[in-house]
Length: 197
Image (tube, rainbow, N blue to C red):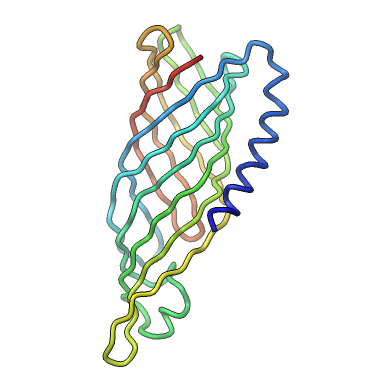
């Protein structure tokens, strides 16, 4: 469940908070991103849709930052077998129609290269504590029955991005991130804003 994902992310945040005081000049910021998410998994067909993230971070140095985000990877309509619950497969096998809703918390480290004060090129890597809410339809006899279940776990994530200083404390950004959630991977391209305190 999402509570397990939150507990895992909280442990990661706790570790980050131990590190943050080591830098007296740490620069804190909040960020928000909105983008287009595309899921992938073996032997399924899935639709793409909107995704988002909101978070808080700290730049420990000019080249190192830590960030914690709440991530919504969208609601996907899926047809296929590999990532669906066993009871659905036992009833009608492949070709089950379902809807996925993947959310969770990511804790990541960012490495930056700043050729000047305006431009920031960065890469990130971390862990994604996720929950996948699945709604699916099964056929029992001549009756279609709507079912639902939830699975959760922790998997890696990584990404690349570019941020441009608009002026003052505000940056605009564009990112590509890949999140893993069990047998599913989700690519998201997003634009966003960062506000530095």
